[in-house]
Amino acid sequence: MKKSLLIYLLILGGFSLYGRGTAPYVLQNVYARNYETLNGSWNHIVDPFDNGYYDYRMNINRSGFFRNQKQANPSDLVEYNFDTSPCLQVPGDWNTQDDRLFFYEGSVWYKRDFNFEPREGERQFIYFGAVNYFCNIYLNGREIATHEGGFTPFSVEVTDKLRKGHNFLILRVNNDRRPENVPTVNFDWWNYGGITRDVLLVSLPKLFVDDYSLRLKKGSYRELEGYISLSDPQAGVELSLEIPELKIKQTIQTGEQGRADFNIKAKPELWTPQNPKLYRIILRQGNEVIEDNIGFRHITTEGKKILLNGQQVFLSGISIHEEAPYRQGRVYSKEESVLLLSWAKEMGCNFVRLAHYPHNEHMVRAAEEMGLMVWSEIPVYWTIAWDNPDTYQNASNQLRDMMERDKNRCAVVVWSVANETPHSEARDKFLIGLANQVREKDDSRLLSMAMEVTGQGNNISRVRDNMSDYVDIISVNTYLGWYGGSLDAILSRTWEIPYDKPVFFSEYGAGALQGLHGEENVRWTEEYQERLYKNTIEMFDKVEGFSGMSPWILMDFRSTRRQLRGVQDFFNRKGVISERGIRKKAFYVLQNYYKSKDY
Ligand code: GCU
Image (tube, rainbow, N blue to C red; front, top):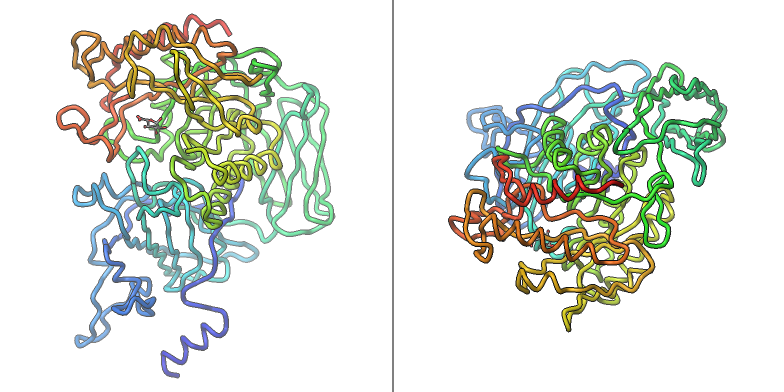
């Protein structure tokens, strides 16, 4: 049969070479499943003109790079060869692996070969921790899915697509910035592109536990509630939940939808930053055994107070970008996550704002083990295309997947739906939709967003935001003394935040080149930054309902918006620690202040 006719029939048969929709599937607690890693060296081809995807008339090229063609005869024309192409390490951004890719934005093709031996009665999924920003996924030359969004996990079932023996997986990864993307074209961090988190080949039983939730029942300290759901709507399947330390072993059966809900009397030790107690839980379904470590706590507000387990708590925080210390680049490992969080602990933090996008799962789990509460955020940042329904759906997908992945992480106490977004009716509609999505899915965490000062005069900073009705805590970014106003003016500044809700300062700060010293009024000196921190804290302490802060930022980080030669050199220098891990004087201002906090 002629190739073109075969392709035509394939497309007619719905087996389009160019695939189906996005891959939204978030597998709960993937690291507890049976998997083999596909991390390591992947061949790659840099493709600025998408020559491997389109033909010269910009039609999708049926013989694109995803076919992984080889020259069979000496006369064959094949203008690419993955096997002779260089490798990139996965996980990892491409920008910091090859100087020629430092600023690169466009498409990069990745290829990984692997062998597979089918096993009776199993299903296989390929899991991606994150790919920034958009990707087409091809298995053995056929597109199996696409995904958009650079910071949330997804997986694709490949059970009926894997071959016995040799298989090859190809991704076309594109990190072009576009107005309709989330984030949009302008943001203050590096646009690290690539397969930036783990890739796993996960093997699961034909019928498997695909989701579960376990938490303290709202308003109770003596009852757990939750559910376990199966991959298929099979009723009457016996499941067991065991929490050995609480001497709990419950057997439950699934209902019609393949889901079992449960309530269990128990009085667990509560998770707190001082005592980050986690319980080993074991779920069983047939031969399937899934273990997790889950903590139990309540986070609520009462008027202008934030309460952790009913006790008022001050969020002694710091903001963190997912930027690797020393080497730079996207963080993807537990080791580097723990290193960054250990700096926050050393500073006396009990809270971290993981800005401005969902960080890798290792970071959230490490925060939970180390006793750090977490603010987790989707990159609805600055001038989003508020009127574009596809943009809204994209933001909603990223919010869904962030919440799905971390629903059992008690350390996550705040879901944030935005950062510094310009006021408009369209923006309010967009954000109200996201806020309602959070409310529908999760009543066990606080909802917030980083707002901005909306007016200032007579030495008063005012915050007025329609979203104040939808959030639990009023979070505000302020750069008084850096983007306007003098250091002295900070001390006489008062605030008007007319809402009976806790006030949280989600950002403030100043740039300082580590090691540059001078008078306090000299920009970029550590002394300027130190003085701004001291004066700002003094100002905040007078604000009614001041319940916490996450100064900007733990460590200097890469940004293409920071070009001052000899000072910034494409780093945002607002870190209280340099990218080489050296503390600046402002670090100790925070450390002293947080150590003085007794709640
Ligand atoms: C903003 C923004 C940050 C940015 C910071 C800065 O508040 O939220 O992402 O890095 O200001 O200007 O340094």
